[in-house]
Image (tube, rainbow, N blue to C red; front, side):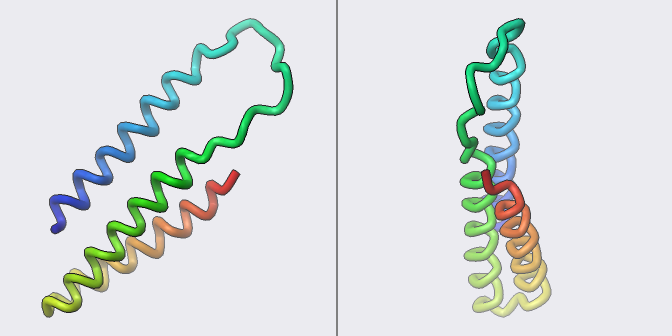
Length: 88
């Protein structure tokens, strides 16, 4: 279960890094035509990762691993807070 969470976290970091690289050269030397559109990718990525961590934490608690399950739920709360902080 924890390996799946690590793989999901790697995918989120990879997705956000590729999106950041794509925006670096967009419109270079041109004045902005208006306000940029809302970017929902960080919110959705961190929200999905928080959901995966929460489900894993609950499954670990039900399996009897109290300490690891509590750490997973703490990480879930931290990621959910970060996701809400990136609200557009």
